[in-house]
Image 1 (spheres, rainbow, N blue to C red):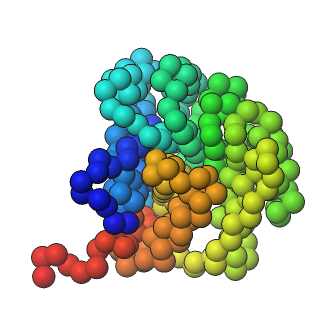
Image 2: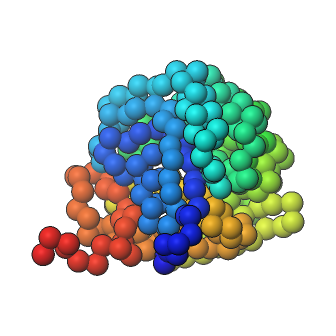
Amino acid sequence: MALDLHTAPPVALTIAGSDSGGGAGIQADLKAFSALGVYGASVITALTAQNTRAVRGVFPASADFVRLQIDTVLEDIRVDAVKIGMLGDPEITRAVAEGIKAHAPRAVVLDPVMVAKSGDKLLQDEAVDALRSELIPLADIVTPNLPEAAVLTGDAAPQDEAGMEVAGRAILAQGPKAVLVKGGHGHGPVVTDLLVSHTGVSRFTSDRIETANTHGTGCTLSSAIAAMLAHGRPLGAAIEAARAYLHGAIEQADGLDIGTGHGPVHHFHTLWHKNPAA
């Protein structure tokens, strides 16, 4: 994305956990913001010890310190969009909700992170109720994948587009302005995401890419949507552009050759054209 160097860039804030392997969480969000021409600020909810194979440990920040980070950033820096990811426990979830209520940012993208790509759990069961009752109603868009949609609705994971729409409407009833039910966990040659809002349902599709290197896809998509909203794009156009960016990042993921498990997507696939040291 070309930038006007004489104009201040849009600003996005990510509220999420830190991934020591660099592929998801805060690290993925800041990479996506930067790749899409947005200045990134961050509030760290937890430290994780993880790589492409496993999450070996999670060290949460205190809820009070999470709130202090939010207040400190938003009292000084103009933020055009907020992306919320890993929260971990009910106290942090409530602290983030209180911070969002206090500062009322223009756009809020909520990615209900519950499980890492490795299968390790990242959200306590007790935090789900706080997520539903306190944070989801504050979101402009919630971006669950199929397993996350099942947790948020209390039903089985959707198996087809009809089920995705039912799940989306159930989550929409919890209070957000829109829900993007992501179909990446489905099967078949085409990935379909459904945007469910009070004005109807929109369908987004792309070819499925066969690769094991998909670590951070959910974080990257939600942060890319936040970046596009920070640029001022309408929601549908923001999703379309974010999905196109992620598709390219997945297409080029194998070229990174990071780790021996589920490697990261290539956030800078449009920028790293050659080795700068050559």
